[in-house]
Length: 114
Length: 115
Image 1 (spheres, chains in turn orange, yellow):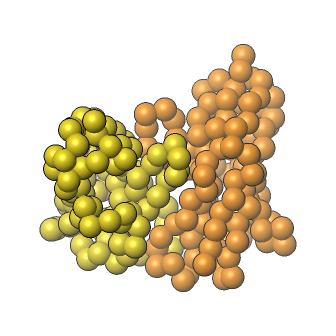
Image 2: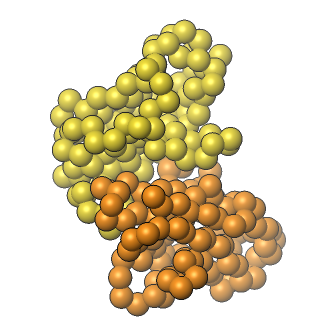
């Protein structure tokens, strides 16, 4: 079985400040990790994914995430946020045993204030 | 590519009525997922198809819900009879393969309100 925990349900931050959205996962096998973003009244879209190789993954819109196997974490970071980054962010995990399904976290609402 | 297309975008119906949600996946994708999103329960996977065959429907809440995929370019999610607690945003997503390392591409969703 696998699970995802997003440690913060809401993260308020001022514009141009750095941000970190935290994600921990649980799995007994090798995992593949994803971050998605959902803007209001939209579907989810992929920000970045970790499959293998370098543990630092760069995605769209200046976001990056670091896979830490020992801490079973995949935290999302951005050095300087913009108002347009206000959205809900979902961490997801899939594995060899789950036949293509991803398990999603509960989401973190990022609110960027001017 | 137009992406995953869902219809309708909004649906308001009375309790007890039948509701049908529609999805056209991205051409060439052979995995299709139906999700439900609510404030209380977050994003829940309802059912997953691969090559038009239902692989896992363990997330379907009850017998009132049914899903079909008659061909590679079309899927429906039906609720009969609908209840107010079915009010949610329903997402369809598709994926290019059965590979566990491939991300899902989501449609815009259908916002269902049952009154």
